[in-house]
Amino acid sequence: MEAHDRRWFLVRLMLLAGSTISLVRPALLSSALAPKMQRRDASDEDLFHDVINKHSGPSILSKPIGELIADLGISFLGTPYVAHSLENPGKEQLVVNLRAFDCTTFVENMFVIARCIKLGTASFDDFKKQLQFVRYRSGIIKEYPSRLHYFTDWVGDNQQKGTLADVTRKIGGVPYRKVINFMTTHTASYRQLFEKTYVDEMRVVEDKLNAADHFYIPKDRVAEVEADIHSGDFIGIATAVEGIDVSHIGLAVEKGGTIRFLHAPLSGGAVELSPGSLAAYLASHNKQTGIMVARAQEPRP
Image (cartoon, rainbow, N blue to C red; front, top):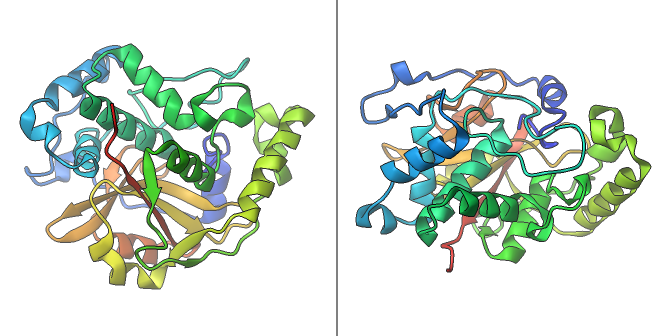
């Protein structure tokens, strides 16, 4: 994301966060990292089946789900960035797009495809059901506020559903004391928030988030905890921008003993892998203050 809407005000928040990102294009990657590029002209359903077919077999199933998520993410290197992909007019509905991502949809889709592989559910309908389960509060689509817009809300709801665990505190996180209210104080940035009812519902969500305890790892301590971050972990990047919990999300990927950052950035225009460590990536962005870390759990049939 460059940040949250986690999708609708991506552009505005990127500008607020002052983010600039160095692009690592697939052509510049070593052969060990170079992905087999997805068929960009294929339908979402065809792309899904392509990916499932390429990541099948006993050796794949025996991998921890985090490693599978990282492998899937690498296979989508170079996929174009798109903003506002979930902000369709009309009634809230599930949006599927494997041809282009913002930072949130990139993470969600890699997570969901990995869950499908692990569960042995290879139909496109199964994929859509899993995507809805991860993206919406309690897995139920109601109206706009039922989507998990804030990263801390997404993590908390999915932890309750058993799909992931917030490991930030466990690996050295400290209290993250910040008022979360960006959506209700910037309603003009969200087309759907012209409805007062939705604003009121989002205020209830924010109040619950503000009543909960949140933790983060300050950026100057990320290098110290790198050994405790696993490939495929979900990384939420805390920000100095007022009212928002994180300004961007992506995946941790371990390469050569170093944790790097795999993400879909607005500024780079495509899914990319940081050339250096996650800690170095954070150090190059003044308004990024640290990270939150969540870890996928092995799905149960």
